[in-house]
Amino acid sequence: MRDFIFIHLGYLCSLDPSLKDTNYVHQQWFNLSSSLKWAWHTNSRVTQLETPWPLATTVSPLPEITNDELDFDTVIDSIADEFCQHALNSGRTVYLNWSGGIDSTSILVALLRVAPQQFLDNLVIVTDLSKSLNENAYFYYRFIHNKFEVQDLNTFEITAANYDQIILLDGEGGNQCMQGPSVQRQLYRRRTDLLNAPWRSLENLSDLLVGSNSFHHALIRESIDRAPVSIDTGYDFLWWVGFNFKFDDVLVRKMFTYAKNLTPEQTKDFWNNGLYRFYQHPRMQMWSMNARDLRRQYAEITPKYFSKKYIYDFDQNDFYWASKTEQGSDALAFAKELRTSTSPYFAFDDQWNKYSIADQKTRQLFGEILQRV
Amino acid sequence: MRKNRYSNGRYGVVDIFRRNIWINTDNEAIAHAIRKTFSSKAGLIVYDLSIFENVSQDPPTVDSDCCLDWQIDVEFNENVTNVNLANPATTKTQTQHRSKKLINSPIVSLLTPERQHELQQQMLLYAHILTETKLHVKLDSAEIQEQLIRLNLDPGTDYNGSQFRILEQIDRIFARELDIADIERQLEDLANWFFETYPWISGRILRALDKLYA
Image 1 (cartoon, each protein chain N blue to C red):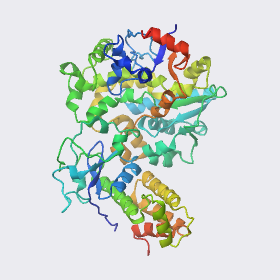
Image 2: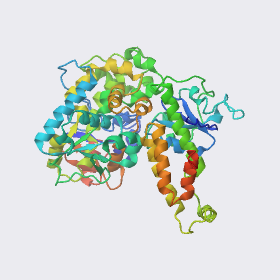
Image 3: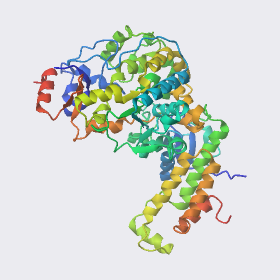
Image 4: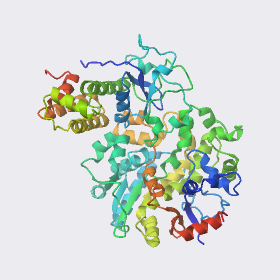
């Protein structure tokens, strides 16, 4: 049996709700999702979780901190510059999955700022206009419409014919580097007292991480002991939950759609060579770790201050800068691959084999793993 | 000098993060149309302001002259803190709040007062366009026939289809432009473009812009 890099526990629960019953031996893993915005797939980047199933180590180990750069603009510009050179050298066509949200827009801004014309001439924007125009119509019409080739996200496919000819960019990891929805929830509630307080001084961590229980807290505390930076405030705590426990989830979850037409070997190749995340880049993760005090201070001004300011400095859209709130990730669009009856896949192992709930052997395997037989 | 438009009414279009009231109108459908069309400029949610004890309609406590000085208190209902296109809770009119009073205080905003006023005026213009044209109202077949007869149009005219096409273009203008001068200019161009085909709708748009006789 191979180790799993992704198991959609929510999918399993939707088929078998009794996985959450208090008298089920492994219910605590399935009840992790009781905390709002917890990952569908849980992994820790600094600790080995004692899951009932064989769990692979993280697909994205924490980078060692080798600089103390605090300027977001410098970091994202440098990543874009490096990426453009890489892409041009590869000879592949670059596709940017642009949702209109803050993360993918910041990536496109970085490219527009630094990319050579040769790169921009071949950049393709993949988007669902019915959604992205609701997010940022101004940016689309000002910077994308009639300037780039645009493909419909709903018909875009990665196939055996193109998986090794393209590089796909998306904004996954942005929330985890910036702050995450749990922080936004407390900002919305004007609970900056919780965000600024030492988390260890809080009587009830469930006030901070809404919906969490003692199992969450135990996992988080253990991981904090291994964190490469000090986790002091409530803000740090919430950021760390996403940065440590949800990073694998957001990086892998779209692979069910991206790789639906690919063999395991092709999927592995695409993962390694055809998929690129600015917010996974070591320098971005370093910035995220180094700049947590800055991010906490500026979060009160506007959520995701630094990436929004970066966009505003470029496009001067003050309405988006001042008032735009974070909408749901377009991962929802990809989630249809997990939730529709035509897509029974719910797990990947470390060799990129997909596991289908429709497969009897898979069900038997998980029945044994989960002690359901 | 640009005309400052006016609006009051029961339904407040509220900024979901800052909680100020951008505009209030007596037409719930128009309030939601504003919410959708301006979603790329602000996260918005519609409240029934009658649930607040310190709001009256006669005389109006809250109207477009002062609504920017009013805000809604913090809400802890998780359903409406999860701003998400797929969250149906934020697409419905809110009829409950833990606090029974509006707060009479302007918000702290990253927008200058002038730009707050600009965004509000854009919403007011949009509301005025919809009020004049009824483009947001989907007519049933009997109403369509009545309208076609009244306008002396061909009985086979796809009235709802034409409404949709024009409304879609109007929505796009309001969504993508940052300044009302550009919005008004493009709306005027749109109306003139469609005048031969849909004269009544185009005429009403121009009337809303005070350009019908210009």
